[in-house]
Structures are given as structure tokens and as C-alpha cells.
Image (cartoon, rainbow, N blue to C red; front, side, top):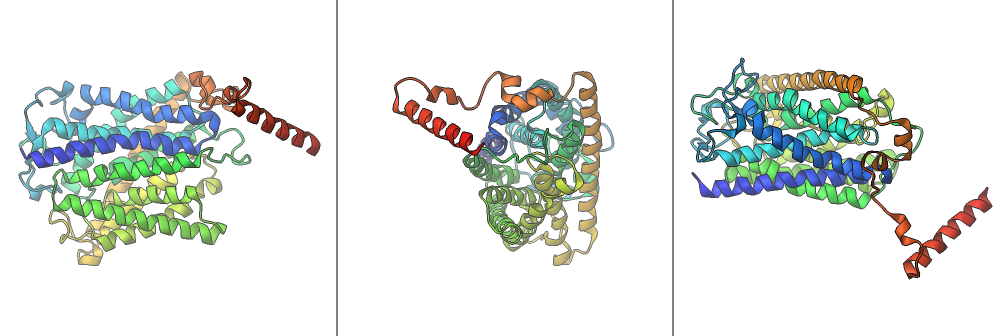
Length: 457
């Protein structure tokens, strides 16, 4: 066991865990005030549901010995049996694994690291159906979706032959197809983005969309969430090296470079298109860059990362407008950022990957590798997208036709926080009454607003 690597992966797991509360603030600030608690809870409940299922059978289905042509793991680790005191990391370089040959960390450390990926993937989907989903229906959806969609896809992409057991066979994308995905462009972002599109279609449009303005109620929340995501993403990407070494440093730097470039390119698009760079655009551009560099961070040079970030920021900024043209209500742009950003990063590996960065990878087109890698990246991306979209449609329709997935029209108009949680994110009534200066100021302001409104009428 390498204790330094073990410590790094533990810290990385904690950083990835922080991404889910960060996502909650990012999404929570983007919705209206009457929906903020529900949005926070949709992310927070993923921590509970996915963790329980991961311990019971999820990890085993994802990283157990393959039982069906690279499609699904077996029940070797059901209930996490037999993992205490064991080491993982024996996958040889020629198996396609991005890690150092023979590098080993405790099995339990790898398990908890991968758990955090499963949690954030499920939580990402919630942004597509903000303002209109029943809380318990969403909770049931998470449980079914990670079982049927995420666990198998994680097996395809992340389970390399021999990593969790010397004789164990892994998933088809990692081992047979040979597509590259360092930290989850396909398994996390394309997967969640396609699922978000499917659920948005199942639940339909919010009341009043797109006629009524549905602006973010708290942009400081959005920036705080984006900052927490950026910080946690270092665990997501650099932690996926599973070693405290040069490859982790490469992933850390390329993650930073691509994200910075994406912020700039998103803001330039806004300036040209809308005449102003926005706070929401800066936060969204950062997330777009993080998404796009995720699959590529351990395979491309810093210059390649800058190129990926520039492309992703611009394309995602343009893609968020597609929902208005095509008529699907993706509330918080899960499709425009995560699906499009994931596709951009996954495909551009086929251009910018370099074996000088990672000998376990392959050379892309611009480094003399031809079109072979680009073709493999496209196959992996399209299969994961189609699988996630179709299965999510089926799961969503099943829940809609049985227990119902959408809140009532009255609850949606009045506020989903009160309807689903009997709470409000902001208790303005406490500022009124009493003899405090705050109360008197609030009453005075309210009177002015009311008087002004009356005069206008």
C-alpha cells in the first residue's frame, strides 16, 4: 500500500463529496425564491439514497467481475463483503488503465471515491426538472436510475480488467472499445445530460415558460456554488489519477486551464450576442469548462486544455438557447452545459490526446494518431447518450403513470417549497412587526412600494 496515494485519494473523495452541496447552491441560486429549498433537497437526498444503494449492491454491479460481455458486474462485492483489508490497483498498463502499473491503495478508499461520482451524477439531473417535480417521486427516480443506468455505465467506463481483482474482467468501453475517459465525461456528464433531456420531456414545461421571466433569485448563491464545484473538481479530476504524482499534477493544471478559458469564451459570446457579460454567464462558463475537461484532463497538454475550454465555453453558451428553439424546458441548462460540454470534451480527446502526457493513453489526430481514437470516442459518447436517454424515458414515464412525477398546478404556482416541504427559504414576515429598527424599515419600504404601485394603477 502506498500511504501517500491513499491520503490523496481520501482527500479527493472528500472534495468530490463537497461538489454535491456546491451543486445544490449553484442550482438553488438559479431557481426562483419559492423553489430554493426543494432544489437544495433534490441534491442533498442523492447523498443519502445513492450511498445506501452503493453499499448494498451498487459498487458490486459497477466494479465486480463482469457477468455479461462487459455490460454489468456481478455480486462479488454485494454488501461490500470481502473488501476490508484488501488492496486494489493491479491493472497493467496494457489493459488501458490510466494509472501507474502496480500502484495499490486500500479497496475501501477506492470504493468511497467512486461513490462520490455516483452521487453527483444523479444530483446533476435535477437541474433539468427544477420547479415542478414531487420530492418523493424524484427520490424514487434516483434509486431506480442509478441501479439501471449509472451502475452499468460506470462498469463500462471505469472498470478496467484486473483493477479490483487480478482475474476480474471489466467493462466494454474501457477494455474492448478502448475509448479514453479519465474522470467521467461519458459516465457522468453525457449520462446525466441525456437523462436530464429525457426527464424534461417527460415532465413537460413549467407553467408560464417561456413567456414568464424565471430569473435566478440569488446570483451570489450561484457564484458560491460554482466556486465550490471548481474547488471540488480538483478531487474529481486530479483524484482520478489515484496517485499523488505527475499525472495528478497534469490533471490539476489542465482542469484549471480549461475552466479559465471557458469562462472567457462564454463571456465573449455573451458580450457579442447580448451586449453585456453576466455573473450567471461566468459561473456557467466555469462549469462548462470543468465538464469538458473532465474526460480529457489526464490525456492532454495544457495547451490542449486551453483549446478544449475555449471551444466548450463558446459552444455551451450557444447551446443553452436551443431549448427555446426546440421547445423543451431544461430549467437550469443541464443539456446545454453537461450534455454538450461532455460531448465536446469526449470528442476532442480524439484530437488533442498525447502519449507524452500519459503513456497509457493514445495519440489523437493532431499528434499523429489518425482518426481511430476519434471514432472510438464518438462510439462511446453516442452509446452512453442513447442508453441513458431511452432508459430514463422509460423510468420517468413509469413513475409518471404510477405515483405521479409532477406537482399540481396550484403547488407549482404557489411555491413548491411550501407544497413539498412545508417550509420557506426566506421568512420575510419576521422582519415586520415588533419595535426593531429593521421591522420599522421593512414596513416603511413596503408602504412605499404599495403606494407607488397604487399611483401607477
